[in-house]
Length: 269
Ligand code: NAI
Ligand code: 15L
Image 1 (cartoon, rainbow, N blue to C red):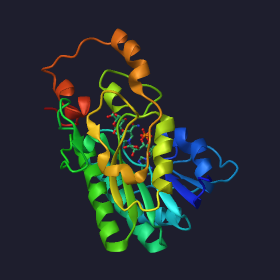
Image 2 (cartoon, rainbow, N blue to C red):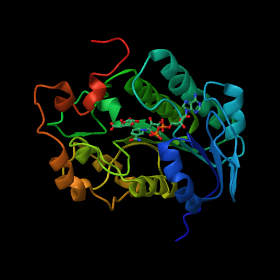
Image 3 (cartoon, protein in one colour):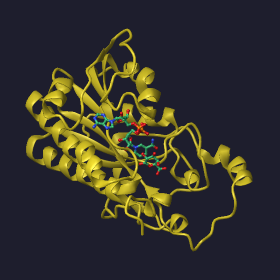
């Protein structure tokens, strides 16, 4: 079955870690891939376009969105930090993106949300999409805003969105926490493909994780997306245990799902 349901896809945050991992993989999903980021990072290849845009710049975002059929929105600040830059890139930025999508009739967006929307749930509990947000910092709050904003644009304008609450998407799990949160790059691409291909996406929340034996997240509310992970953190478990020490259970980074993000921030304790 062809995966090219869309002619032109916009990938924001194309110069980042996940953007680079997805650049080749997303060629399977479209005939033209438009890459966007804030600053130049190389030339366009075959079947690629580059449109630079600061997400905080409404006119630039409008130009990046014009003429595409669907958007994979990865761009923005990806860790905890001072509020002002997060507000510009993630809060104003996601508003600019949805306004441009509305103006240009783009009907499907995949929004890179984050597990830090629910980072203040405990590692000893399992949550699903019905659990209210408990963000673990300004970054998590900005992603919760994006989730709410996208729900509004679905209810009001019919723009379908998958909010992908990505766990930890890296080549391999870096610590014991990531045995639960890990999402391989191939599974991330499978998740994006499923979100692009499913006939009815609606407004959906799905936790982005591989098929890890240890998990804190229940995706049973998202079966309509049709995502099936093929990778697992289990194959890294022995190596991770060998190079890390036993968790200190009084450490908030061990108590809560958000890990060190629950203690991070520019203003101290
Ligand atoms: P990254 O930090 O490597 O990439 C983010 C990209 O956004 C960068 O290329 C950066 O230049 C761009 N960007 C930042 N501010 C911008 C602005 N004002 N205008 C335009 N572009 C801007 O992050 P990564 O790891 O690639 O993550 C991609 C997305 O997925 C982010 O939205 C992140 O919050 C989300 N995510 C990633 C996770 C992971 O494990 N890698 C986990 C959860 C969420
Ligand atoms: C995120 O949201 C970050 O973008 C990523 O860099 C990781 O820190 C990840 O969460 C995580 O929770 O491991």
